Length: 563
Picture 1 (tube, rainbow, N blue to C red):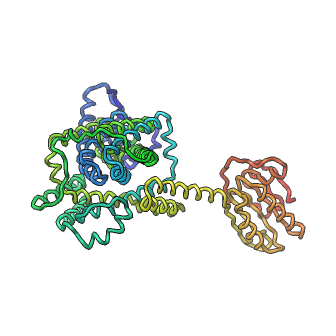
Picture 2: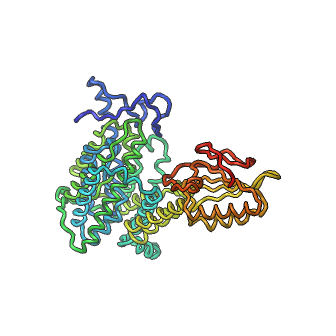
Picture 3: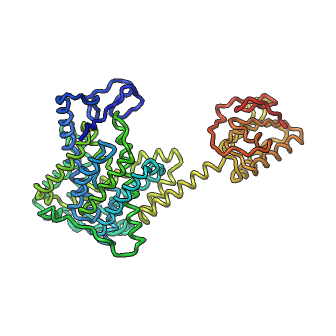
């Protein structure tokens, strides 16, 4: 295998990350820092391989309990989570375009897989996974990976929040000793009744203990906190359960016997196609977003997203054919890999091999894990998918409605319809921002100065009622300066401004029109069509012509008269 150790370009320090200090030399002793490009000396390969082995063990310890829990939440055989983790590590790790990204089963697809399993059966879900992988390969070959990332961040965060809520309300039933229902709404409706009738009190205690350990473990002193919280929580809760009779993980004695060949689902073709498209969409988006995040965590060269999408598709095809869950790039494992000091893709591949060896040789240990413990682990994962800090950022940018509609749609309807609703709201908000023009009226700062009206954005017919109201409120005899910082002006808007200007001048009132940026109004007066390309313009930074009877076009410095 050729040397694929990412090496930073020492001539360019513009790339910054949370693992390196910008503008200064990199400390290669810090986790996640990449060494300079390897020399031919074999002695240089030893620390690199040692770093990859150490990182792979850390990632394996994080991925093992997560893979088991996701399989349980998906309604799939527990071995399916192990198979997906092995395939994600080996296949996606070997072929991927982002060497340090770690792939495997992800919480984002649990609700989709659970629905497919409940509707068509597990082997049909394997078929859906395999076909979705083929579609991902085609998307990667078509070089459209960057286009997949064009979806609004509010939609993506809302989708993840809806998935997180779905996971939480479902797994709380398992923590309390019951069983999750087929839909999030049913789980929410039955939640009150479940709290009133805890079937297995010991299981509830174990699940709650897992949640507490997951949240408290990272706050412990350094030697203990260095152990991954999921591993510590599952291990301690499992040890505490040995004296109790609680439902535990059902893993076959021969893991290889769990390999299930996919079968064509029996049912409406539209439902099957919807499931395939949903898995393709969510797996692709999660993998590419994770890849971009991993790129931002190190100073090495940027990843090849199209190649990464092909690798994810190949891994999903293999996982589906082998009886595994869908595979995506997982940011939690990838971030752990980078921070643990991984240097090459060998760490990702080795983590998959550790997973395979553990499942084959130490399966009896996995069968001791209580289901309530894995459910508690998933409750914490689901809560973390609801990113409150991200919600505050979206609220400041006016995208909260898109987020809430997407999350609500995922919970109430299903994942694909929720995402479609969110995309629709995002498009409507974008159209509103493009069509609704900002109109600001500034009274004169001193006597004799004109009133200043600033119009910014795209001035078209939807904004005319508001503009007309603002213009009508101006004092009748007061001079007015009209600052047009617009990138487009349609015929209706031109007629309104022209008729209003003529009426004011007919009454003897001075009107100054100051076009900032592209002289859209002048072009229409000259009989030329208005420009259709958006150009950035800001009235706030433009020079004021408040005291000048003749305004100047900011674009060409040509004066144009008041009339």
